[in-house]
Image 1 (cartoon, rainbow, N blue to C red):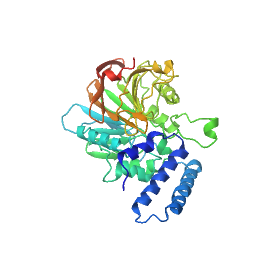
Image 2: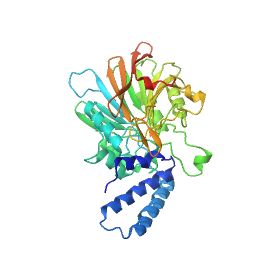
Image 3: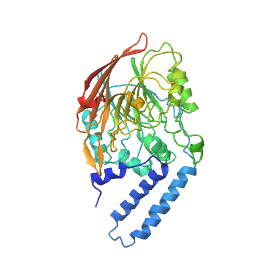
Length: 410
């Protein structure tokens, strides 16, 4: 008998962030599938040790001490990773981009969010990272590439970033199975995604996906001595400087950064190194940026601000794509002060845990305007905001169009 939606969700309720625990969850799933497929379970105990414990030890040790997949960067196969934004409907000026993060969990909620995304038929769909539990080929198949998988592929493109969970398996399935399934169209030509970062652009906006996942995981002991800081590798920095040219003082288009790991967080670790690297590339300009990320399993609209040596950013956390959505308040007054709006509505209670609403963000680009709509899995518009880019100086005008009363934190 296949597991219920509630049983599936329970597996994620107290899921930790260590590699060991996530590998154990993957092995547990393999074992449960094995038992489910067998007509006789007389050898369940012996098979548990063979398939679960031994399998866990093998995959865990291989990921912790085995070689990491070679880093892929541009130029690669004639591709430079920069694609022109295009509507999938001829002569339509508006371009839509759906953003989902921490979605690839194969839960009833992730399916509901994906099916809702499909109803809106965005031109582009982008996953901001984390394939659960450890980004194995099977987990990528279940969420993205199998005929029954619910991921919606945008008509103009579908792209992905890596989170830390993909790197729990050394990134092998991410590079070998997931990237080859992703693409961006230029005219009628379909270009396969070649690296874990990219740029979509038009005359007014640049949407730049950066890779913080590859450097989010280190080796045992080294992680204690020098915790991973999610820095951008030299290949990515060179691409941003020489190909994307984000430091060009004459280019005043609006910049939207996408990453898996948070530049600002009121709940977990903040990763300031990528922000400092980006600000260095941007130069002395004081222009603000828009930045969407995941990692924290909740929907949070942060106040515009800086962190460390990074840029002034309108930070948005979209980690509520598929896993149980957390609702706790920040532990300190200082962290609470970072937040403008926070979706703390209770959708259900499961095993003593109050869980919130899963959802996604839809970006609507039309000329100098960028509107972000945040919808939950019941298709309620939770929050809507608008930015207007001033191409003479690179400044952003921002306003809230709609907010549910429950989004207020004060």
